[in-house]
Image (spheres, rainbow, N blue to C red):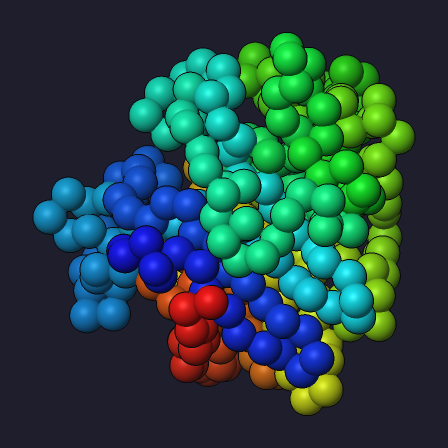
Length: 306
């Protein structure tokens, strides 16, 4: 991907949508990342999965590490803040451990500066969705976006926070992520925990979609005649559209993840919502159509260089 292609834009109704791509390429082997998708599913759909979503020669998925910026009703909203820069993430070598990041430079090229951001949405609290919540200021972690409210799903905060109310599922890396990317937001008084539903403005609303994590959520956009749903990690690959029962290896509650995925896809198909996942490669977002009792892909989004 050329550097000029890493900042893209489109308009949905009265909302400007910016796509900021930090990385795009081969990730984990399909059997490791999406173990429920049989090899024949990839092979049967190879004509459109490769090269944007699958690398047949290595057997690896192809994904993007990207954030979405919405300019809506005079507000600037950032959806997910990626993995941060030079974070200690044991067990994630080669992907997130001590990896450099120039996300802030990419945002600046799109005309988005930290002090401009009104709202940060964390669709869930995994390592690659909260890292730039904070930055290093002389050895202390402080909010990267000094004016922003950070909208954090209450169920995820309870699970990943010190109380660990679910009592299960925490790794050492989860504790490190919470300590450097979430706890400083609480200390600064910028965290807003929400549950049930949370309206950001007239165009944008947060809704729960649990399963990938206890509190994972989606952002629905409705403006004019346009609709979209930013689904975070409800889907990592378009294989999960044609096979909604396929979870990623990182899904905390597999059955709830499948139920949430199917519900979001049904509404997207019925209401012509553009589906905007956190990690799709290629065009990054796609329309969904019903296909008998399942789903198929419609048109891919048309983003232009910003």
